[in-house]
Image (tube, rainbow, N blue to C red; front, side, top):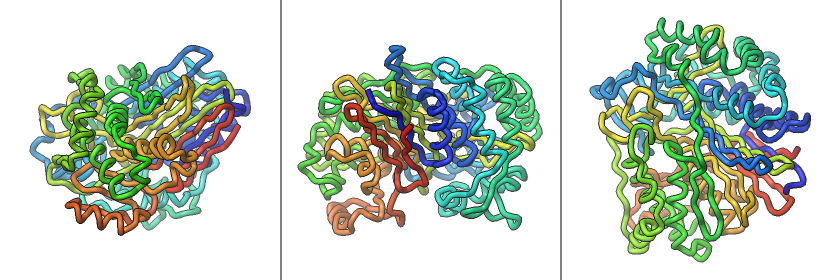
Length: 536
């Protein structure tokens, strides 16, 4: 049992809020939900009450271990063929399709059902300790009193480097309400140190503080959402909101070198994480050397094979049969490992590929009673839409659906699309050893994988584990951060690999985690963000 609690997340304001709630007598659930609500205020393009995600709970005193999965479903008005004639391409990493007019990517038609608030409220109602009103209060204060734009927020807001997906400055100006909140008078994104005051969001949160999630899904806020969608051609409607409930799932289990891995079910990214670990168990990674040429080749090929299987087999199990028994079978992993040992390169098909994308955020939390929470939540590619008077941005989750009918990721009314989010807990001798997760779109499972390997195979502290240079392979190319030496990548290129170097030293998901050793808890906030780990 840990001597103290700890919380880690990419936003210092949110970490502080969650820890203060726990210091006031709240448990890990109270702290994590307070943190998540503040994250939606101070990182409003990454997450929010109109987003989606996956929430893992391990509560030993209650004998409870499970997931609340809140993957945003497509609106009931969506159809499989609605955009089939608009396809221009697919993001190179598989995170979204490029359509004519960018209708799936930004604006009212890009919005799926907002799912996050329902999960926050359900988790707190069932497992929290403090009153809901106290858990919501810090987010209200940050919205109404204002917060300062941080470096990581500005970097994301000002990112206009994608040649295919809508640039983020265009999302900030997609609606007048968003522009008024997050842009300077000249229409450019607010810069580091600029203040953001969001009184509309404060008022929305006050209604939620008083009435819970009911007001958002079946009350005053729901009616305002419906009116705005009808006025602007959105697919989302009152019936979508009224019928929504988060999905309760058991953990998806795997094992790796004697450790037990608990992650989320599809359409989350847990199967990818476990499949990659199954493959890599057949290699002595420590003997290869961290980020050596052979280490990059082996891990990248495991990533590619998991990506191929994801594209072919992983989707919403309510709409398709997902062959988890086969994908996670040890014999299947052994066969894939033999291919890698033989030097075979996997091919990842892409439709006229464009550039990768990233977003999302994470909170990992443990309290002194051993309760653990790991939650990854997101807006997807944020829609840019803010309803006048409500103050929050909606998700843009329609952008990741496959506009081609008859595929695992195809559009169907009420269907959730695959997401790489994989909030996870690694158990050692029956007790939590790692509480981990990450933002980073399609790179999430790849980042969580590498940080997990850094701890389990290389003995890293959590801070060192999240700080080591990372890479990814979700296409035929291997993407590397700028701290991977060129003598390593030149050797990979000599083996016939295309290597794409990022200009950033930190990248390929922003992993945040806790490591528990006996009664000691240590945390690591990815240096690529503004975050921190803070003890209770």
